Length: 397
Ligand SMILES: Cc1cc2nc3c(=O)[nH]c(=O)nc-3n(C[C@H](O)[C@H](O)[C@H](O)COP(=O)(O)OP(=O)(O)OC[C@H]3O[C@@H](n4cnc5c(N)ncnc54)[C@H](O)[C@@H]3O)c2cc1C
Image 1: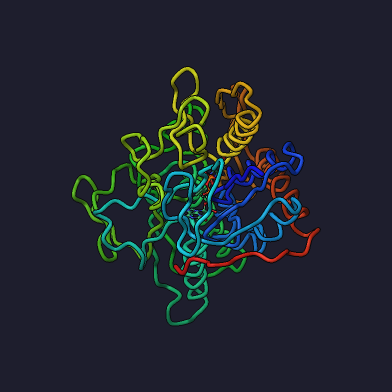
Image 2 (image 1 turned 90 degrees about the vertical axis):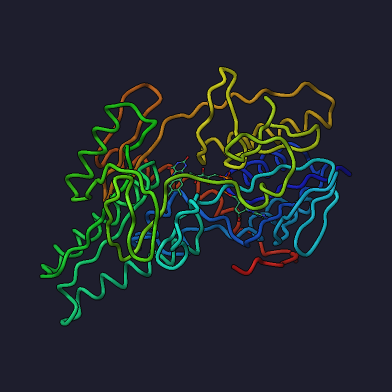
């Protein structure tokens, strides 16, 4: 029987699993490998950060989810290290495959000048670091209640003002504003400083204007500079000014994961995998989502989003089935169907594919529905089934 490995159980990997399982009719063995036992819903990390979502609402448990696809689907918790011909080498096991899909996502790009990384300098691309940032934030909110420290000011720097930076800054500021207003707290301020040369760089001018106005209204301070380096408790800007911080969240860009660094397949200058128009690296190996540099037929780069990862998962799965059946393959033509940007509290900006935006509470309701529909579907599946035995060698990090 044909064996297909899916390496990475994020947005792209799960969609590949769903499509393969639905169309393969138990004719193939599917093994999904992830270094963690959970699918982290990173598009909702801004909610976890300010306790609007509980921990359990921010992940889907992979052993139960994969089991729900039947006896031909199996989950293994291990860290993929390299690929040797038709064998995936993991930290604790090896798997021979007929076809494989690389869906290992990306990591936060910490430049080499970010020397303080790890202690007070965190990303939000992993569940662990988001929880870490949430604890810092809550600890400081709690300190506002303590008599002796309540007047202390606190500065959080968010580096990068793409989708995730803007969402994180707006959500934390809105939460603090509401927290102090609801309790009429007389306390020192929490300053949220968003440091980036541009806000939502790739978006049209009206979207940037609306998002900037909302950030201003909330009280987020925009510092329009690049960060040259991050030192212990302060950042240095490109004009040599410094800003002291209590903690920093880095959202300014993504980098390939160590697994992708180890692979010797063709790559773009930014280190991501250079796939062909069918999302292949070789006739039996596919790459999707953040891990791959995907272009649509007009040569335009496709933005790394959950949406494009899911579309890639679909195409890779269809192309594996077509390869097995010796049918023509489907070219990847991935276009984004809009974007929903959370801007603090019950306010979001939905950029529709029809050229107009929906803002405020209506935008927020749309964003909520998108997030809920995705999550409820997977959680329901996972809850139906008791976990069959699975191998677990979870990465210790
Ligand atoms: C704060 C924030 C907000 C965002 N908002 C949106 C949004 O509103 N809309 C949108 O479309 N996108 C959004 N994104 C982007 C989106 O989350 C990513 O583009 C998406 O997660 C990429 O999906 P993926 O499947 O490629 O990778 P991921 O979802 O990151 O999954 C990769 C998986 O691979 C596993 N893995 C990695 N390395 C290994 C290894 N060596 N061995 C085994 N397993 C491994 C990981 O554990 C993980 O489970 C947001 C991102 C952030 C950080």
